[in-house]
Image 1 (cartoon, rainbow, N blue to C red):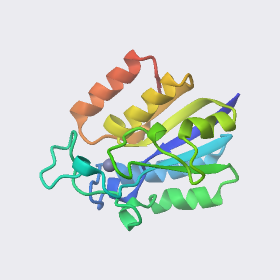
Image 2 (image 1 turned 90 degrees about the vertical axis):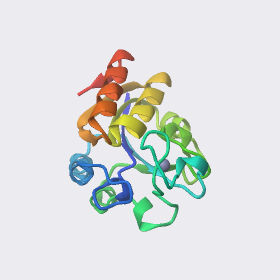
Image 3 (image 1 turned 45 degrees about the horizontal axis):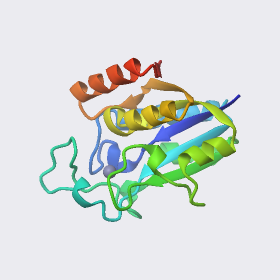
Length: 188
Ligand SMILES: [Zn+2]
């Protein structure tokens, strides 16, 4: 059974100092980089929020639930993967596929994204024979949550490595973890 590591949105804008910096983001990036360095997966998939014109997803008066400050604008440094993760990916022997999402609309789940060849995340995983995924990244209460739920719904054995995630806010993070637990996504 092939296993994949799904690294959700560990991008500069979601780490401290970024346009939508999440507390703990830089620590997650460092720890995810170390995890990639350990190897052991048949595939690593990275997802990136990659916005051109995502409509009301961006707002001058964001509520931090459905609307957000401008972030992860396609082609900008803020949309790039955190340098620690990028370095780990460059050094790994494991196959790596990048998926981008949200060009013209909000897209929280990595399963809404496509790779450079236009394959959906589900197609990328199926092509590699992946039946089991570990999900890590940012933010626990939004994109990690949505990606893990979709992975589970796709029939993949899904585990969230909670120590390798960071949430926007404690309240919504708790709600997200409770929901994942309720859906029988494994939390470690
Ligand atoms: Zn976004």
